[in-house]
Amino acid sequence: MMKRTFVYGFGVALMLACVAAPAVAKSNLRETPLVKAIKRCKASVVNIHSEKTTYNNDSLFSNSRGRKVNGMGTGIVVDERGYIVTNHHVVHGVDSLRVTLVDGSTYRASVVSYDSRHDLAVIKINTSKKLPVMPLGTSSDLMLGEDVFAVGNAFGYEHTVTKGIVSALHRDVEVNEKQSYENLIQTDASINPGNSGGPLLNVNGEVIGVNVAIRAGAQRIGFAIPIDDARKIVASLLNVEQLDNTYHGLIGVHRRVGEYSQYVVSGAEKGSPAEQAGIRPGDVITQVDAVAVQDAVDLERAMLGHSPGESIPVVLRRHNERLTVDVQLARSNGRVRNNHQVIAHRAPAATKAWSMLGLRLGPIEKSEVRQLGPKYSGGLRVLAVRNGSPAATSGIREGDILVGLHIWETVNDENIAYVVNHPQFSTFNPLKFYVFRSGETLWGQMEVALRQ
Image 1 (cartoon, one colour):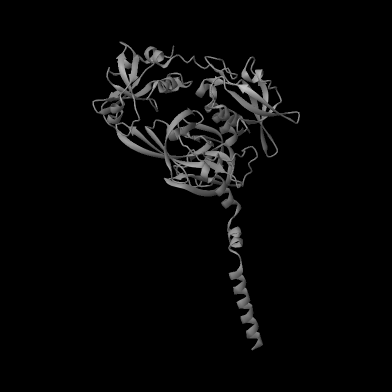
Image 2 (cartoon, helix red, strand yellow; image 1 turned 90 degrees about the vertical axis):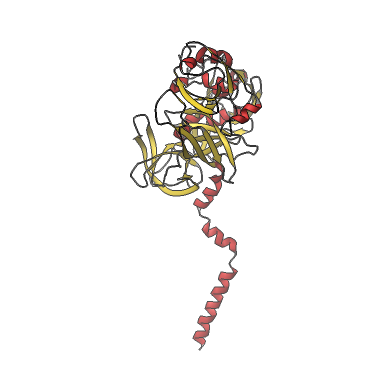
């Protein structure tokens, strides 16, 4: 009898102990490092939806409306103002882009710049709220078998999380005759259509790769661009000379010291704003304006959006001493950059539109914008077409409304200037165009002479 009482009493005590256990303790048992990592980074992952038009023929000019095709991908927030990194193949040739944040809010996006060879692109959304920037890791010390996970728009299922390991490193993959990759990370974390452009992350919630490809017909064989490689390309895509026509003249390298990243100055161009500010080789730049700097991406995005002549505070470390200097940005017009790439002189858009394309363009009335429908936010009226020009040869007529060139809309002169001055202009020549005529959109391609 006493034995039964003991057993009964033990059961009651155990039950009461379980009831009394605080809910926080239970939650802590479930909140694994992976759960914490996802909480840390999920707001910096965006879902991308696209729409493009495909045609059944290759004619240079067609009045066919074509067939609308929806696409999907994923993006990584790299700047709180809405700059997002994704794959080039996610945004290539699209008519429109829509980005959805983790809270469900949706924004229209535009392509800022891209590198088709390395399959990376930067897009931007306009939002009044600051976006959380993806925590940055490194791909320099990845270990085979290390736990990783992916977050992305898998098959359109937004913010899908998959887990796996690093299966292999330094993979070279050829997708087709036009696209191949070098030095990829292979993972068995499920990478599906729609994951492209999204992050591969470590258990700290830091991005260590950009998901890019899957092996057709195979299961759990996916690939990602190492983040250390990707950041070098992204820095060039955010370069202020290309996007803002300003320059700072800083030359530096990214170095890792233990777990920390540093941007170390290797030099300042002669006569540049950086040299005039007194920045020296060996200085470690830790902050530019309000942005903490780990590499060239942080440096460029911190300088982005500032006008020529504006002074930017730069915090640096020199011989264990903390210094703050002001770098006054200069205008860049046809200047030779430190990597010896020449930026074309940015002639006025109207001049180049006439000399290169054979178009004289002007604004349209607000009432005409409404007639274009919801697909377009505006356009430019074709006021004149030069005889024998690329535009004339391609069938553009006076009175047409030019609504797009290549993958960008043409609402104002700045849009035209961006296209005709683009450093990669030769890669999208013949130039695709879209005009609105008699209530419908027509498209075509024009061969543009590259001499300017």
